[in-house]
Length: 156
Image 1: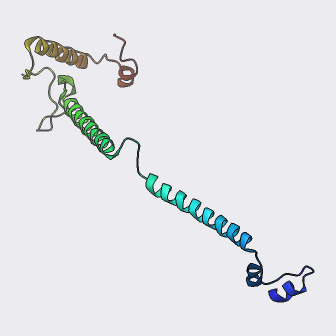
Image 2 (image 1 turned 120 degrees about the horizontal axis):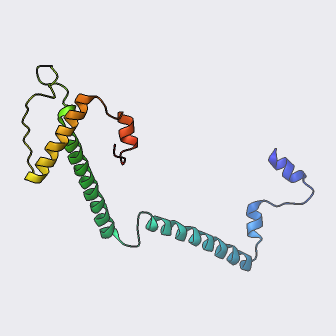
Image 3 (image 1 turned 120 degrees about the vertical axis):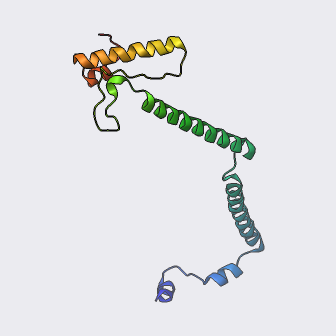
Protein backbone atom coordinates (compact mmCIF):
# COMPACT_ATOMS: atom_id res chain seq x y z
CA UNK A 1 0.00 0.00 0.00
CA UNK A 2 2.82 2.42 0.90
CA UNK A 3 4.57 1.53 -2.33
CA UNK A 4 1.41 2.37 -4.28
CA UNK A 5 1.13 5.77 -2.62
CA UNK A 6 4.77 6.55 -3.34
CA UNK A 7 4.33 5.63 -6.98
CA UNK A 8 1.10 7.65 -7.23
CA UNK A 9 2.62 10.82 -5.71
CA UNK A 10 2.95 13.85 -7.98
CA UNK A 11 6.70 14.22 -7.62
CA UNK A 12 8.77 11.43 -8.98
CA UNK A 13 10.73 9.60 -6.32
CA UNK A 14 13.32 6.98 -6.89
CA UNK A 15 14.09 4.15 -4.47
CA UNK A 16 16.80 4.75 -1.81
CA UNK A 17 19.39 2.41 -3.28
CA UNK A 18 19.10 4.11 -6.66
CA UNK A 19 19.29 7.54 -5.00
CA UNK A 20 22.54 6.58 -3.23
CA UNK A 21 23.95 5.18 -6.45
CA UNK A 22 23.17 8.42 -8.25
CA UNK A 23 25.19 10.57 -5.78
CA UNK A 24 28.40 12.12 -7.02
CA UNK A 25 31.68 11.10 -5.37
CA UNK A 26 31.91 14.56 -3.71
CA UNK A 27 28.43 14.15 -2.14
CA UNK A 28 29.35 10.68 -0.88
CA UNK A 29 32.55 11.97 0.76
CA UNK A 30 30.61 14.79 2.45
CA UNK A 31 27.93 12.34 3.71
CA UNK A 32 30.57 9.94 5.05
CA UNK A 33 32.47 12.82 6.69
CA UNK A 34 29.27 14.08 8.33
CA UNK A 35 28.39 10.57 9.55
CA UNK A 36 31.93 10.05 10.89
CA UNK A 37 31.81 13.44 12.69
CA UNK A 38 28.47 12.64 14.31
CA UNK A 39 29.59 9.16 15.42
CA UNK A 40 32.86 10.62 16.80
CA UNK A 41 30.98 13.35 18.69
CA UNK A 42 28.53 10.84 20.21
CA UNK A 43 31.40 8.50 21.15
CA UNK A 44 33.32 11.39 22.76
CA UNK A 45 30.32 12.36 24.90
CA UNK A 46 29.82 8.73 25.93
CA UNK A 47 33.51 8.32 26.86
CA UNK A 48 33.59 11.59 28.86
CA UNK A 49 30.40 10.62 30.72
CA UNK A 50 31.79 7.22 31.66
CA UNK A 51 35.08 8.74 32.86
CA UNK A 52 33.48 11.60 34.81
CA UNK A 53 30.92 9.58 36.80
CA UNK A 54 32.01 9.06 40.42
CA UNK A 55 35.26 10.98 40.09
CA UNK A 56 36.14 14.14 41.93
CA UNK A 57 38.80 16.72 41.35
CA UNK A 58 40.43 16.05 44.73
CA UNK A 59 40.94 12.33 44.29
CA UNK A 60 39.84 9.10 45.83
CA UNK A 61 42.24 9.24 48.80
CA UNK A 62 40.82 12.53 50.02
CA UNK A 63 37.26 11.22 49.66
CA UNK A 64 38.19 8.19 51.77
CA UNK A 65 39.78 10.43 54.40
CA UNK A 66 36.65 12.61 54.53
CA UNK A 67 34.44 9.53 54.87
CA UNK A 68 36.60 8.19 57.71
CA UNK A 69 36.46 11.58 59.45
CA UNK A 70 32.66 11.63 59.13
CA UNK A 71 32.44 8.12 60.63
CA UNK A 72 34.66 9.20 63.53
CA UNK A 73 32.52 12.28 64.15
CA UNK A 74 29.36 10.15 64.13
CA UNK A 75 30.93 7.76 66.65
CA UNK A 76 31.96 10.68 68.91
CA UNK A 77 28.46 12.13 68.81
CA UNK A 78 26.98 8.73 69.52
CA UNK A 79 29.28 8.17 72.51
CA UNK A 80 28.60 11.69 73.82
CA UNK A 81 24.87 11.08 73.54
CA UNK A 82 25.21 7.78 75.40
CA UNK A 83 27.23 9.50 78.15
CA UNK A 84 24.62 12.26 78.43
CA UNK A 85 21.84 9.69 78.71
CA UNK A 86 23.76 7.79 81.40
CA UNK A 87 24.39 11.00 83.34
CA UNK A 88 20.73 11.96 83.04
CA UNK A 89 19.76 8.58 84.45
CA UNK A 90 22.24 8.93 87.30
CA UNK A 91 21.24 12.47 88.22
CA UNK A 92 18.60 11.79 90.81
CA UNK A 93 17.69 14.03 93.69
CA UNK A 94 16.10 12.74 96.87
CA UNK A 95 12.74 14.23 95.93
CA UNK A 96 12.75 12.39 92.60
CA UNK A 97 13.40 8.89 93.95
CA UNK A 98 10.18 7.10 93.16
CA UNK A 99 10.17 3.67 94.72
CA UNK A 100 12.54 1.38 96.51
CA UNK A 101 12.87 -2.30 95.79
CA UNK A 102 10.05 -3.14 98.20
CA UNK A 103 7.61 -0.96 96.30
CA UNK A 104 7.24 1.64 99.07
CA UNK A 105 7.99 5.28 98.54
CA UNK A 106 11.23 6.49 100.04
CA UNK A 107 10.52 8.87 102.86
CA UNK A 108 12.05 12.26 102.14
CA UNK A 109 12.65 12.74 105.86
CA UNK A 110 14.50 9.44 106.25
CA UNK A 111 18.18 9.49 107.01
CA UNK A 112 19.76 8.38 103.74
CA UNK A 113 23.45 8.64 102.98
CA UNK A 114 24.44 9.31 99.40
CA UNK A 115 28.02 8.84 98.21
CA UNK A 116 29.24 11.43 95.72
CA UNK A 117 32.44 10.88 93.81
CA UNK A 118 33.46 14.51 93.50
CA UNK A 119 35.68 17.06 95.20
CA UNK A 120 34.47 18.20 98.62
CA UNK A 121 33.15 21.59 97.45
CA UNK A 122 31.10 20.04 94.68
CA UNK A 123 29.82 17.31 96.99
CA UNK A 124 28.68 19.92 99.54
CA UNK A 125 26.94 21.93 96.82
CA UNK A 126 25.18 18.79 95.60
CA UNK A 127 24.11 17.95 99.13
CA UNK A 128 22.68 21.45 99.57
CA UNK A 129 20.75 21.07 96.32
CA UNK A 130 19.40 17.71 97.50
CA UNK A 131 18.30 19.20 100.82
CA UNK A 132 16.67 22.14 99.06
CA UNK A 133 14.84 19.76 96.73
CA UNK A 134 13.72 17.64 99.68
CA UNK A 135 12.40 20.73 101.54
CA UNK A 136 10.68 21.99 98.41
CA UNK A 137 9.03 18.61 97.79
CA UNK A 138 7.83 18.44 101.38
CA UNK A 139 6.25 21.93 101.31
CA UNK A 140 4.36 21.32 98.08
CA UNK A 141 4.92 24.90 96.92
CA UNK A 142 6.72 24.49 93.66
CA UNK A 143 6.33 25.65 90.12
CA UNK A 144 4.64 23.29 87.69
CA UNK A 145 6.99 21.35 85.45
CA UNK A 146 5.98 23.24 82.31
CA UNK A 147 6.88 26.56 83.97
CA UNK A 148 10.23 25.15 85.03
CA UNK A 149 10.93 24.14 81.44
CA UNK A 150 9.66 27.30 79.73
CA UNK A 151 11.02 29.77 82.29
CA UNK A 152 14.22 27.94 83.26
CA UNK A 153 16.28 31.15 83.50
CA UNK A 154 14.05 32.84 86.08
CA UNK A 155 14.65 32.39 89.78
CA UNK A 156 11.78 32.21 92.29
